[in-house]
Image (cartoon, rainbow, N blue to C red; front, side):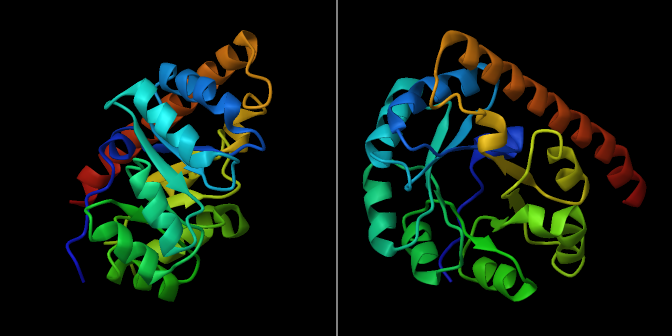
Length: 227
């Protein structure tokens, strides 16, 4: 296995990845600005969005080095290469493809492949994933995540898929290192990027980060007691 890249610093710091997926990517730069105004600085632009790579490059250029912008729904090595060429700072996939993972890790780029079973999680980790995306997280809920973490505590897991703003802390309480949230956070702001809609998005981002911070603060005394 090649050297494992570190988890994206912005994701480690905030424990939230915002997923930008839309039928029309033209509104996503405004959405990205609203999210970062609320404190979310790890953004995934899915390749299912028309013009995704141009949008990714534009967001990265506009927001600068303090914001990490990656590509999601990366299914092939060709897509991985194109995303990296466009400036993606991390890759996210819904599945475990060791070739895609290797394409990222050889260049020092973190990759977060999607997995569901213990075998898939372990395979992704062995292939060099920086962390493994539990997907779809809502199908088994926090209980499934907790059961996965029990035999695999050394593998960082990001809960993605059906995770809402109010449910995020339950996945973190169950052992997730971070959560990824898309439509429950955006709520159509990508389709209607008016000042009011974007302002509400910024407020939701702040609310989410406050809940995540509260969950982390509550977990800290438990870890100290266990040590």
